[in-house]
Length: 266
Image 1 (cartoon, rainbow, N blue to C red):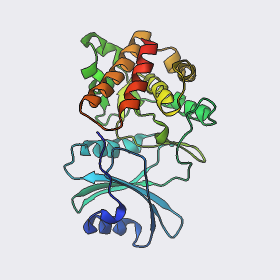
Image 2: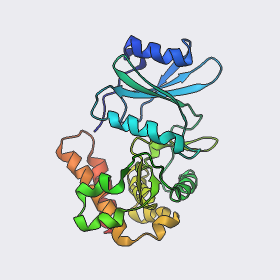
Image 3: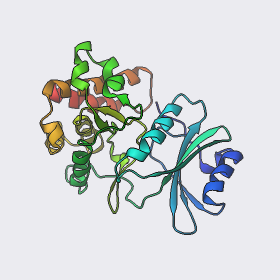
């Protein structure tokens, strides 16, 4: 699940040279500590003040399809998603370059956090957006293996989903930026708000009752079929429990929060 990070200077010379052919050879760098799906995650500061965020994985990596998905969906994303500027393969790496944004490290999900309404506003908008026809996985593709077969229709829908509304994926600046669309999908519009509830418990240390109150400010979630929500959050909890069986280090808090949220809504 998690990917081993390397620093910018550890990237093979041909890969760095390919990036420099796009941005120029003069820049400063800052390594990003968050994100678990990229082998490289570096912010480049160019002399003219422009920032470019570079993420990538070795060609052939088992998670490389996530970069392909993000490349395909980016042109169709809302304006609160940083735009993809270029993508390339060089030195055995596949690299994506995004417009860098000026923002706080990430959103505050705690009960008194000042970013909660801003995040909720974005999720309300996202819950109404149709998914582009670019071959995205469906909600059933993502969670079906952890559901009872009769739940398939409950997870059917045509909305654009982010599917990973963690605090680290909301950057607060001149707008509320939503980053890392590697798991973009198609499904019911209430999915991201339901997953946000779990993240409020995990990232914000909220009680399930507090998390539900915030998730319910997204009408798609407030009006969602309860059996569909229960199927989704139970599948999410089961998926993390499955990863625990693989011995993923540091996963226990995630497992606990996802199970707490699922049992509360169950």
